[in-house]
Amino acid sequence: MTGTPSKKRKRPGPRKQPHRGNPQRVHEARDPRHVEKATVGDWIGGARLRTLPLAITPVLIGTGAAILVDGLFHWVIALLCLVVSVSLQIAVNFANDYSDGIRGTDEHRVGPARLTASRKASPRAVLIAALIFFAIAAVAGLALVIRSQQWWLLLVGAVCLVAAWFYTGGKRPYGYYGLGELFVFVFFGLVATAGTTFVQVLTVPQEAWFGAVGAGLLACAVLLANNLRDIDQDRAAKKRTLTVLIGRRWTRALFTLFVLAPFVIAGFLALFYPIAWLTLLALLAALPAILIVWTYRVPRELVVALTLVSLTSVAYGAFLLWAFVG
Figure 1 (cartoon, rainbow, N blue to C red):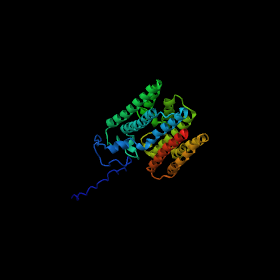
Figure 2: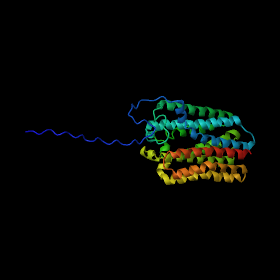
Figure 3: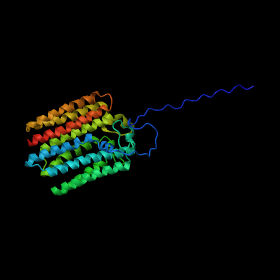
């Protein structure tokens, strides 16, 4: 006599893992080839406007130092320098969006969604946007070379473009090996500021170099805040930023140094150009940024910190310009 068959128990399936990627991404499964149509707002967001003050600061300081040399405001040259700097900054932002997106690095991103990773635009479209702004920077830079007749500056411009691309592009991007801050300090601090001064007056006074160091350090502070926000996600993506290499505590300490050191430089300059003391007003934005970095609980709070440092940077540049021409 056979017994009644027992009901088979359903084995519990594997637990669903919590989503660790970008919280702005749609959680539902979808065709990875699907690309949404990016709006104008999406493209503006992709340009990352909060970083653009970092491109304006060196032009302000460099122009002030140039006026200090010959007492003239070379506004056309200064405007071309601004076009080069801002276009290069936007190009780098789109290039990073493209390179990180095709690598899958931004799958783990906590901050604002990128165009490529969120599939709001195709990788090809983002790459084209980057190349357009690289081209704008190159054309404006060529105009500066022709105007100054300093043809060796073509090599400097080429190096800037190559360095901007290989920050996150190529097979071995140096931004993935803790060298991002060095790139930012050299190209968005020293080269941008000294270059702005040189193409206007064909010399670089020490005031430009002091200001260049300050501008470069503030730009590095913004990058540190950005990488501190993404430290866990970068580790998961095998992206070895300086923050990943040295950890949170040392990143906070380095961020504080990078934010405050420019004001020490401004204090020194104020001994010769008293208006430079007004740069201390920029501490109204810098000090809250430092407080956020040391006390934040949610990584998204660091977006506020990096925005405050960007505003600090442009205020710092504006006050030094005033000090040099006042």
